[in-house]
Image (cartoon, rainbow, N blue to C red):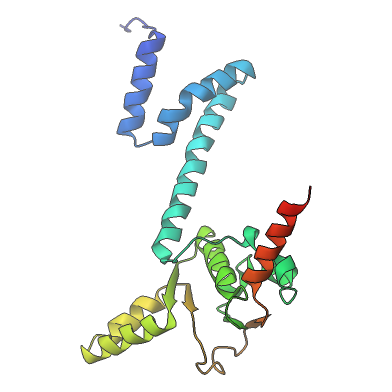
Length: 217
């Protein structure tokens, strides 16, 4: 004997969806299903279309939050994006080269990259921007200042933890070392890409360009 079919009211359905999303840990679906239902009704989506929209919203938001967690875990001192880099402020930087590096193929091949130039020429912006692109692509990335990295390894050596510390850094796909200064670069640059950012201040040129844009009537 089959049980009779019961139709839930809209408030009861909403409550059931909310509860189910909480239990299944689907926060995006819980907060967006009302909007997606309204859009589905306006656009006359099929049941399959509605379900696809709902599931894709959850997947896209989960990917975004995962990327944000990976970026935070890197330890960058500030947020920098390659899309914000002002190539007009530094003629030494070839946009095509940076766009190619943003594909992260060099990381997959295990090739090094060195950014060489004077202070304020855009090295850190490019370093953080490329590291962020790598983290968003799913690579394990870590940021470290050269002096702090050396000090950490020296301290680990004193306490006989050097092997473990080196192994921890070795587990990442990309180690972004900032402020190398005048350390020996022969081995770092072997078989890798070198980007020379020059000597003219990127920050100063970028600031001047912004002021000129604001001054245009």
